[in-house]
Every structure is written in C-alpha cells, then in structure tokens.
Image (cartoon, rainbow, N blue to C red; front, side, top):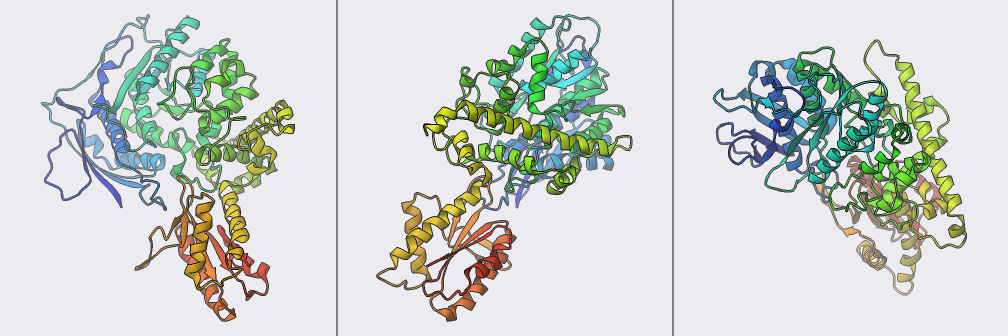
Amino acid sequence: MNMAKIICDDVKIPLSPEKNVINLSTIGTNPNIRFQVEVFRTHCFCEIPKRLEDLLRLAAFIYGADTRVSRGSEKDVFAEKWVRTFQFILPVWDLEFWKTTSVQQSLIETLQFLTGDEYNFDFVQRSQEEPRQSIFQFKDSGSSDSLEDTVILFSGGADSLAAVLEAIRSGLHPILVSHRSAPSMDNRQKMLVELLQEKFNGWSFPHISMWVNRSHDKRNTEFSQRSRAFLFSSLGAVTASVLNINEIRLCDNGIVSVNLPQSGQNIGTFLSRSTHPRFLSNVQQFMRLVTDCNSLCIKNTLIYKTKKEVLEIIADSGHPELLQETGSCSHIEGYSKLQPHCGVCTQCIDRRFASESAKLAEHDIPNRYEKDIFSSPLEEGDERTHAENYVRFAYQLEEIKTSNEFWEKFPELYDCLPIDVDTDVAQCANALWELFQKHQKIVNGVLEKKLQEYLRAIRRASLPKNCLLQMVVDGQHKIDSRVRYIKRLCFLITRSLPPAFQTRKAENEHHVQDIGESIFIASQLEIQRESPQIPFGVITTKPDFANIEKGSMPLFVEFKYINGRKRLNGIVTEMSSRVLVYRDQGAWVLFIVYDPDRAIIDDEKFVAEFSKHEGIWVGVVR
C-alpha cells in the first residue's frame, strides 16, 4: 500500500514506526516548501484572515506531498501505487472550523475526485506565538479604487488568456491570479500581463502571483501533480474573499475539461480533472464553507467551447499575435525560447490542430514546435500513441450518430451533469454532445486539409513512414496501438516458429518458449520473460512473457504446446484459468498455441471460445 504520513510545520508528535514519514515546512530558517504569501499584490493593504491563511498553507502542503510521493514506476504493472494514502498532521489557526465534520468531508471529497488519492487530516492548534505572514504587500496597480469584479486563474496558456480576453469583451474588470512553480512559467505569465496592459489600456490587469514549490532547487519525485488545481483554486478563493468578489473563473476548453478517455487504457484519475465540472462543483462548495460566502461561484466559461473556438476568442480580440506568447506544452522544462513546444504531447497536438482550423498558423508558427505533428517521424511510445489516440478518437466520434449512443459509449459524461436544481440538465447534455461533434469535425477537417496539402509527397511516398499523415493514409490510426502490437507478435510467431521445428520436434513447452524468445529478441521487441510476479489468492504466478508500457495496460504472452491430442483438454483448462487470473489484474493476454499435429479440429471455434472475453487474443500456429 502506498502510504505517507505528512508532518507539517514541525508539529510535535510521538515517535512513529511508519517508514514513509515526510516533514514539510513553510516556516523557520530552512523551510522545504517555498511559500511566499507576502508577494501577493493589488491596490490596497489588507490582512489575510487566519482561516484563509490556513487554507493557503493546507493547499501548499497537499501540493508539496503530491510532488514528493511517487505514484509508482513503469515496473508497477497494475498501477498498484497510483493511489496514495496521505495522513496529514497540520497546525491551523482556526481549529474549531477545520475540525467540523462537514468541512472535512467536503475537503476530502473534493481532493479524492481530483487526485484519486485517499486523505485523512488531523488538525491541531497552531502556536499563537508563531509569527504570521498575514499581510498582502500590495503595490500600486494604477487605481486607488477596487474595481475588480472577477478573479481569473491565469496560467499563461492559451485558454486562460482567452478567458481574460472574454471577460474584458464582456465589460468585466478581472484580477489575474497565478501559481508560480518554475521560472520559465513565471516569465511567460509576467510577459503576457505586460502585453495585456500595453494593448488594452482601459484596464490595468492587476496580477497576484505566488510561488509555491520545493525549495533548495530539489526536483519533484512525482510529476502528475493532480492536486495543483486545488492549490490554484485556493489562491483564487483567498483573493476573491479579501476583495469581496463573488466570481472565480478557472477555464479550459470543454474537450480538455471533460477529458474523455481516448483509449481504453486511460481511465479515472489517469486523466487530469483540473477543470472537470464535478471538481469545480466540489471545490466551489468547499470554498464557500471556508470563505463563509454562499454566493461564491467557481465557473469555467469555456466549458462548451472547442480549442479552435478558444483560439478564435484571442483572434477576435484584435490581437491574434498574443497567441504565440502563450504556452500549452505539458513539458515546461527543457525547451528553448525559439521552440517552446515539444509538438507531440496531447496539449501541443490539440493546439496545432486548433490553430490550423482557425487559420491562425501565422500566429502559431510550426517552427516553434520541436516536431511537426503532421510530417515529422514519431517515435514508438508516447509520441506515436498520443497522435494515434487523438485522431482515432475523432474518427470514433464521427462514427457515433446519435446523442444516446454517445452517452452510452461514454458513461463518464454523467459526472459532468450539474446537480443544481435550477439548471436544465437536458440542455447541458445536448451541449456536451454538440461540443464533441464540433471537435471531431475540426480534427477530421484538418486531417483532410493536410492530406490535400501533402498529396504530392504522399503520391511520391516521400513522407516518413511513421509520421501522422502517412499513418492515416495507411489506416493505422483506426487500430489501437496495443492491438497493432499484438497483431505484429502473432505475425512474427506464425511466420518464424514453424520453421524452427522443421528438422527437430519441440521437446516441451519450455523449448517452444525459448524459440519464441529468440524471435522477440531478433525483432528487437521490448518484452520480458517470466515477469512480473502476480498475486492471486494465497499464491503468486507469472506469465511466460510481458510487455509493459507506461500508461498502457500490460500485455501478457503465454505459449502453449499441444504435444498430442491428449494434451488438448489440459491446455484448455490452463488457458481458462489464466484468463481468470490475468483479466482480474486488468491485463491483456495473447495465447500462442503451437499445434503441429492439428489436435484442434476447428480453429475458429477454439479461438472464439477465448477471444469472446475482452482483451484476450489467441493465435494458433502450425
């Protein structure tokens, strides 16, 4: 079990026998969390209420623990360490409030949906003698009156910029709030704010930006950072409460916010929920309790817009050139100013398709991407998987003809429906259906346009074989990458195994496995033998071979040798038991059945008996 006890701000507790105890501190001479409340800026002095300071520290500690406890390595085949259990011992000023059952229940429900982790909080009284960073040190923003009427959480990405421009177009006066975790992100946010101030001189765009990260330049252990949205929301709630603002906008386009699984390998919190409608509903309820403001509203005004429509908001502002100053890449480190985007993560792919469809390529220059998603060769693994999943998802959406079929295929959508009795649920459901249909038309339209653009290269077969456009031409985008891998294994074994036994009969099943391993090695396939150990009841077992890729369900390969008809019944029994064990673990299974003497009378019937189970494949070899 992946458990950690988090001791916050040097709380004194009895010695604990637990191994994974992590001390996090925002105070003293050597804190290990950079927590600079004093850098909050706006246009008047204002003391932060103690409860709100508690909230900021709570969010910082949760974020700090999130980045320090790994969700498991690639060797964690069944993602057993993905879900972590945190026990926080945390000092607070307003102990009575934080001990309230309804508050703790709301906090835990919000965090569990967002991160998928389990939480327990033991709040204790913070020492009254402890110094407090209780003052916002505000700087002059060009106005002596508080005109701000909405808080916008500003990341420096295209979607948050569009949210700001949308608010300005509506006549609002937004205050921007940012979380700074890396210098490159901080620089981009500052530059964009300066550009907004320069181009829209009717408003000063006050900007609160707070550092919360690991001190001493230590690198994170875990990079998924699912809790960052809670930290972001907390910064927004404190700002809104101090300035008596009732609206917070945490915005992303609807496709990213809903984040439906683009393949069967991505489910639950393997997918980000940072702006998911249910998270926003949960965190709104929690922040209302903390701020004691029942009218506080946390919304995503872009929820029913595609990425293309978001970019069009930037274009319609009269300053489309702002787009090229935003960052969308999930890899915030390691890229130059000339090429700030990798081009192959899901965020980069979505942005390129959107800018092409919106005719904004001149403001989203392809050369600023390290790889061109359309024509650059894609490496096996994440690069190819992300690209194929993206276009396959659009293809699958195109095949769905009715709203009912859409909701049946993606039951995850029900988490997106509002629970507010005053909201028209049917209208929201229809809006989600229309959103994803708009998305597929955009993606498929861009593909058709690019195929036409590269028609000569396609005719001349001069495109890289493993670039996205060539894969689409070859129809590979319609096949799940795991299915393609299984078919390749079957082809290699079917072609290469029988010749190995032309002059010498296989001695036993182990002998067949040895030949199979030689074929895998010769084909440079990353596949491990007799790994991993799998618990089942009171015993453990292991497959003959396993292929394990990060973010994918494991594939187990079993060789079976039918050495005479009498062995057939035993093979069927063994395969049936393996189906039970492996599928219970969520793995896909490929059985290679070597049947040189044709003990199996009806191959089709034999294969169908097992392949009727999802994720089970059978190849009969002679």
